[in-house]
Image (cartoon, rainbow, N blue to C red; front, top):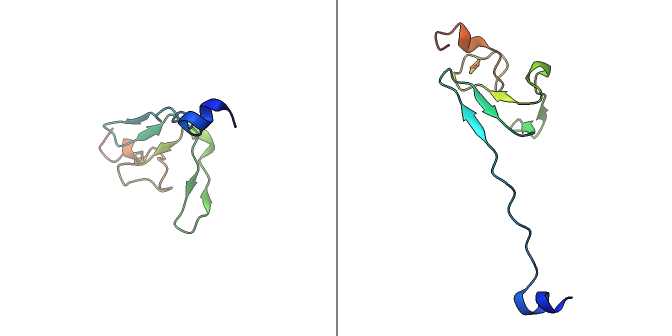
Length: 79
Ligand code: FES
């Protein structure tokens, strides 16, 4: 253990940078990060291939593949 660690305690790593999330008026929620979405039983929900690399979540409630956006907001009168 270094003298600094003894004097000031163990060094804690800096917090990770904040994840940017863009909420669009249409309802789409774009996450500017790599994420893993799991259902309530812990199973990974596979992100649609056309959404890579940025995942898009549905905020309009019209998606056929929730929680991901499938573009249904465009015909649901929101965009
Ligand atoms: S936001 Fe796109 S389908 Fe809901």
